[in-house]
Amino acid sequence: MNPLSLPKPEAVLFDFDGILVDSEPMHYRAFTEVLDPLGMGFPWKEYVEVYMGFDDRDAFREAFRAKGIALDDANLAKLVGAKSEAFLRGLRDGVTAYPGAVSLIESLRAAGRALALCSGALRSDIDPILAQLRVARCFDVIVSADDVRRSKPDPESYRLAFARLSEKYDALLTVPEKSVAVEDTPAGIRSAKGAGLRVLAVTNSYGAGELAEADWIVESLESVRFEG
Image (cartoon, rainbow, N blue to C red; front, side, top):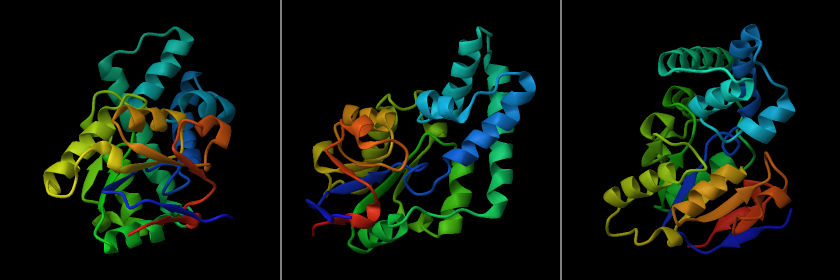
């Protein structure tokens, strides 16, 4: 594994699913638990190709749209709630961080870097995992699906995360181009790029060819070092 040394960023904004933990199979099982009884489940391959990168709301909207079935806001809220409960049940067996993820976050925190988490997951899905990994204290800002109207690839979530970091570090942060987002999906890369951030992509979920829009691509965060 070749090491990658990157220029010192003003801030680092981490995606969550697929970057900190391999939680996508857990999300898929939770969707399946909710959708299969309705006759609307889909195979893992379709989840990866179509749904991964969506927040829960847009994933359910797409599943219903694909079947030509209307979905109103009230039923959408019930489905999201049921999926969240299924996901939390799956957490009882514990989670394992991707290699290098926790150590990189802790080293950046120790170096005084401004850190954010920018995720399409619900905050209720995020907090228990951060608690298990003991890294919640490292993040100055957490933006989840609860905080935005439009999910990735829309840039809203990264714009919001950077704006909130800028409020906390008004003397440190200048422009988004001097900060780095860490992503694992094409949708996440487009979201971060749309917010003006540079992007480090990790091939945890997709191959390098599908992540080509990123500024840097690595196989693992174990190989990454930020200068300064």
